[in-house]
Amino acid sequence: MNKDSNHTQDTEERILHAAEKEFFEKGYAGARTASIAEAAGVTHAMLHYYFRTKDNLFGRIVEEKINMLGDIILSAFGDGNLPLEERIRQGVERHFDFIAANRELPRFIVNEVLARPKQTGIMKDNALRIVNKLLDNLQQDIDEHAAKGLCRRVNAQMLLIDIVSLNVFPFMAAPIVKSAIGSYYDNYDSFLELRKKENVETILKKLKLD
Amino acid sequence: MNKDSNHTQDTEERILHAAEKEFFEKGYAGARTASIAEAAGVTHAMLHYYFRTKDNLFGRIVEEKINMLGDIILSAFGDGNLPLEERIRQGVERHFDFIAANRELPRFIVNEVLARPKQTGIMKDNALRIVNKLLDNLQQDIDEHAAKGLCRRVNAQMLLIDIVSLNVFPFMAAPIVKSAIGSYYDNYDSFLELRKKENVETILKKLKLD
DNA sequence: AAACGAACTAACAATTTTGTTAATGCAAAT
DNA sequence: ATTTGCATTAACAAAATTGTTAGTTCGTTT
Image (tube, each protein chain N blue to C red):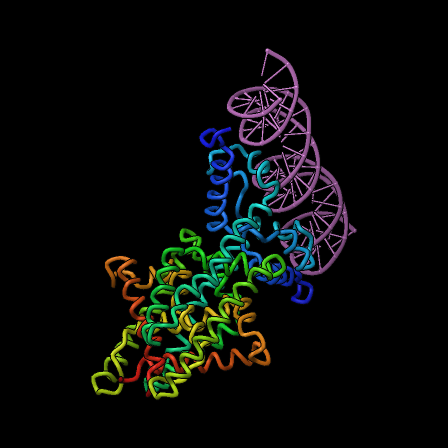
């Protein structure tokens, strides 16, 4: 069987892709295996042939997504060689951009993943270990700069929660934020551009000495 | 039929109460009318007798909750007689306290309400009208103080998004934030106390002149 | 070419879930 | 006391949804 005639990967991929969309949009309970199969262009039975249960299929999606959590924080804030202010500015911007490129991820994580502590506990702990290691490093960085009188000695954990809150919420609550800003901006994307700058400013201002 | 023997309100209330819990916990798709009836201590048929469909019952809960949105913003930030800084400090604290007392509301709104624009559009618009009126007033307040050189001239809309983001996110992502702060705090509530202060500081610092 | 095995299909089964209906109880009105 | 009407129940019906199975197709192996 050569690669071109191997439909397995194709079909499996298509189901996974359709499943991600369905689970993201409707959540586990709202998702229908029949819809997923239809969207993937395969018969309903194929879904069960490859993944046996809805649970299994869901698990595959969750596994893939939860690992992104730690990775994005690390890749955004991980460059300890930059000057602190630049490190944080870049972190906020990269994190914002990642969320903007994965707008439905936060809702999925909050609703579907965090609601299943038993099934996702290990993966979550793993992501947290990565983040905590980074936070230690960042806190050192902050403390050193603060000791030199270059910034306030803020808590790195709190700062990260600030950043994630500011960056994530406008996307999670997009429908209401969209209505709220209404006609003030040309379109939602131009609002988001401003929002990103605003978040960077808010965070950097918090670091500044009084 | 005297009031004591009128079981109608009792039963209806009990169903509504149980429904709110079920819908909050599991969302519309995950909620089961049978579970709601059982939790309310009534037969399954009674639920349909009073509300006919799951949709109707859900609509009643949504209607009640969506109206809280505008109200809380207004009651938190509405006091225009206070000095600006005090007005904002009080607003942030009151909004935080409200969310803390209704921790599952944001998730419900984001997941269930915002995902149903057709059914909730009018209610949402109504809440937004209240908020926008308040924002106009707050912006004037800010502009006046800025003109006197007492604060930065920040955009009131952006400021409100900042506040809501900072206050809401830690509750929506509570399971992961809980794990993340781990052993650093005695318990989650003592973390939340600090978090509230932190948010007030973050916002007020944003207003300060450089 | 015959056997083999993985991918696939159509039909079906089992369960869950929402919603209905006919009958009953019971308090208040006449 | 009889009637009236709402509240309630148990049983049932209908639909939706997940999962299974027996059999088919088709490329590969021997």
